[in-house]
Amino acid sequence: GALTEKQEALVNSSWEAFKQNLPHHSAVFYTLILEKAPAAKNLFSFLANGVDQNNPKLKAHAEKVFEMTHDSAVQLRAKGSIVIADAVLKHLGSVHLQKGVTDAQFLVVKEALLKTIKEAVGDGWNDELSNAWEIAYDELAATIKKAMG
Ligand code: HEM
Ligand code: ISQ
Image 1 (tube, helix red, strand yellow):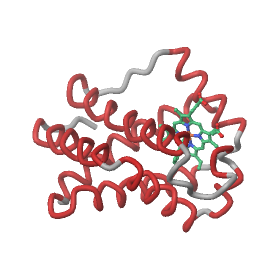
Image 2 (cartoon, helix red, strand yellow):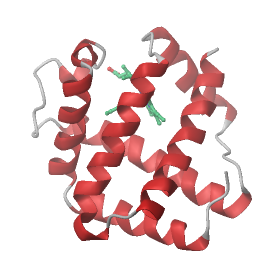
Image 3 (cartoon, rainbow, N blue to C red):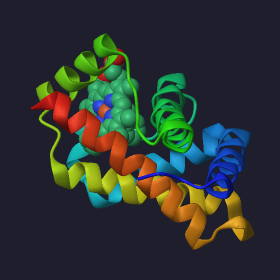
């Protein structure tokens, strides 16, 4: 799915809003994921002590997921598809396959990502913005799933 210029601008500004308070937004993200999928706690090595805002790994990993989704949106706008370097994609495929990540978990992470962005942008939330992040996440998730299988 392609994105409009307006949607790219919305994704860019909400990504900035997310980064503005990374410790808080990443804690919100993990908390939402663990509410819906408590078993995820055992998947992530860095969640062993729960959602600890002082653990730099938590922030780094959460930021990476949002960053990759943001990058996907930019690529979808620029060329209508996502490109991830072969070696990176192979690695992502094997890590997620090895952890036994399921389609249901991809959905949980998607809903948590959208709710986190919603909180980060406050009044700036709207359907166009939501759709843009959804499209970007869905394409990225499909790309990773293909590399898993
Ligand atoms: C690891 C991205 C979805 C579970 C990773 C890594 C990245 C990443 C960049 C680090 C790989 C490395 O260590 O080099 C993404 C993206 C996703 C996604 C962009 C969606 C579009 C999911 C989902 C789950 C999941 C749905 C399951 C809840 C994990 C786990 C690891 C991992 C368990 C290993 C963490 C550890 O080192 O303890 N993912 N991921 N991922 N991902 Fe994801
Ligand atoms: C999925 N993969 C890697 C890291 C993550 C951090 C938070 C939520 C989901 C994730």
